Image (cartoon, rainbow, N blue to C red; front, side, top):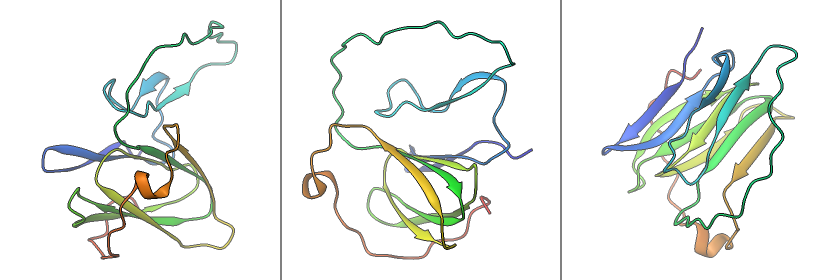
Length: 146
């Protein structure tokens, strides 16, 4: 069974890659408490009840955008870059694969017609100009995420 992989550069976690089929039983958070995006997986037996709850208002400060990409259908290639825009790695993602982009840069290349992806980011959204800076496309070595 494939397992979670951490992509790092310069002592920072750039991304977390979770291939389909690597989810484990119970509640497993992939992100650290200090990350601006909180992402985890659930897998429980039939009949498990998770207590109903309401999230309290709690002030938080997010100084950068982090995002989660979940491939529902099709294939895409994720290009990962360090914080200076230097290419680190390419990962090919397919149905059920998950990528959490924490720092550095990233770009995506759709490999199949009809590819469907769910993208989740922390907010509120401040607009493209304030949220990001463009970096040039550069190819990096292909990772083990194929």
